[in-house]
Image (cartoon, rainbow, N blue to C red; front, side):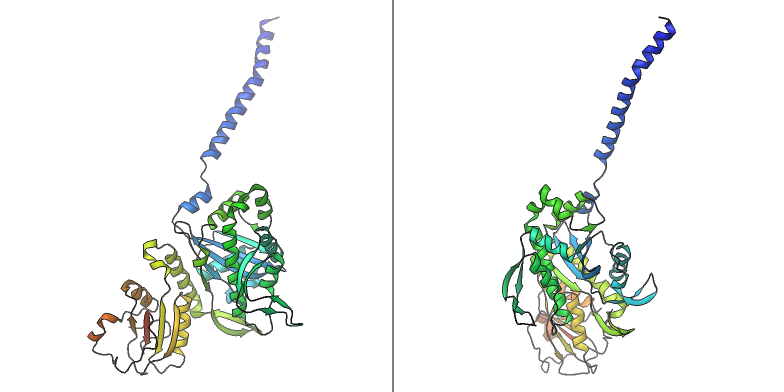
Length: 407
């Protein structure tokens, strides 16, 4: 055999080995890339940011309920923002006033998500869309959701009791009925409250059943009930983190406003052009990140609001403002005089920093602490009757414009 043929034979026989080496080398490089690639979910949960997740419970291709779950993993604290579908806004993409859910498209949720982000002035991290039927299937999968029903619910046509009063564990079919029925004499606030409480019970039950849901066979069924923008592994990681939420202490905020009719339909327009809800969301987000030692056991402060002006209904409107920030307004009324010049906060809580945080909501910096009331020279306490022993008494003066104290 000639030297030329021998050399060619050696080259040909070496090609398969070279190909194998190249494949192994390329595979090693790819494996190394994937091994060292950061897990985006790990970055989310190890960071210092509040995670905002949009949940849409959908019925007939339309949002039945829309919630933004704000969750801070380091503390396990969470809050729920309820977005009513009849919220009136200037819809940016069509440049006209309409319901916020008018932009909802089950095939493309991005536009709806964007409107909610603009409304709340926050970035939504993830979204989950669940049809009402799939919602019921998940409830069955986690073996029911416990809910307290204060008054029995009877079917209004034949008087048949569909939900007895007391603690009920609802299966999937009953859950679907519970969140979707509307009685003729039931107002929108009661309907929203019922759905909110059930959704919180749903989150609580998911947490209790977390290990079961993480089982590979169960997880496959669980994941198939959602539409979302994240992969299957990330979905399960997210719900595993949600299991750490203390649902019993989860606060609820609803976007409220004034009802006005536009093109023949009543719409809710957020107070102060939406600035109030954005401020509530900002304060809520800050509250979630407070260290545990600053939370005072998640105490809810009580408030008494007295109108010291001639503006009718001012105390009631201000009560709605503070309820939006999570305060328990236990008394609303008139002060003994209607000519108070300056708005005053009387603190009985014993926490001066919390009293000042309360005042910052309306930019009031005129405080009096109960242990030094006798030092006041310009306030007639003898003729002022406080109706309750609340943590704070707010006496509204002429310097209050309905939102802020004007100095």
